[in-house]
Image (cartoon, rainbow, N blue to C red; front, side):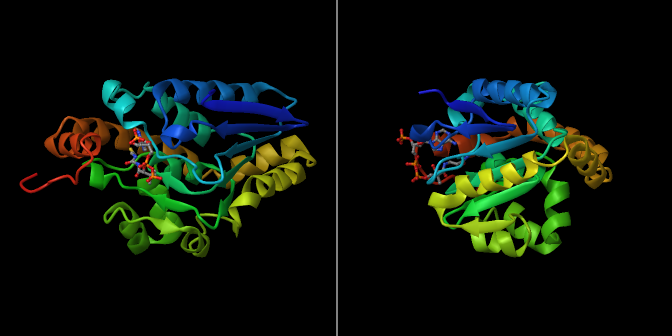
Length: 254
Ligand code: COA
């Protein structure tokens, strides 16, 4: 099965995460495909809006842990970081549709989408600390700005999932619908956007992001350096070993 589906209808370019049997966990190869899709959608003038979606029961379980361990993202040029930079600086509107679990990067990438519709089964989690790691995608900057410091600490220090309604309350998503309608709701927004003048959309998005874009780039670089350092330490090793051995991690002494 193709893990990333791409489809253009009128001026809407839809990317579907499609590795359902592994909960849409993202591999290096998938990040490269996503990167190429973003590049294509950025330069192709027939595309005005990007839609990013998963399936009714799963958005993504985040990094594919086995692939991640085989190819740890230690350099800024790692596919995951290149993908995040490309999404964060994508000039046209991005609409996301999220149902089911959105783990790690599956949640943090939404901070770089412009409109987010969630199924009422969506569960967002940023469990980086639980993996002995630190946040990415500038979520350490954007999350407290969006939801306030204390709520960001629940998400990033406790690593606790928050559900669709809570995400709506803090402005993490725009609306909540039944899961079967989420992808269609994203298309409806995308249809409204594709009917608007492209340059006005691009300039408006650039203005909306003018304060945050440089700061995001800097924060992602800083996060990446700390993340790479922690990946080599005992807590991350224990967390990943526990995942593979299907047991709870033991962080005593770490
Ligand atoms: N990397 C690799 N494989 C993964 C994965 C990931 N991030 N997430 C799930 N899988 C695999 C599981 O190991 C399982 O494989 P198996 O059938 O060979 O045992 C399969 O996908 C189904 O996952 P399962 O956990 O049984 O599904 P679920 O519906 O009970 O739970 C999640 C879904 C997403 C909540 C759960 O899989 C999960 O928490 N995954 C890990 C998320 C994570 O820590 N991501 C890392 C972020 S850096």
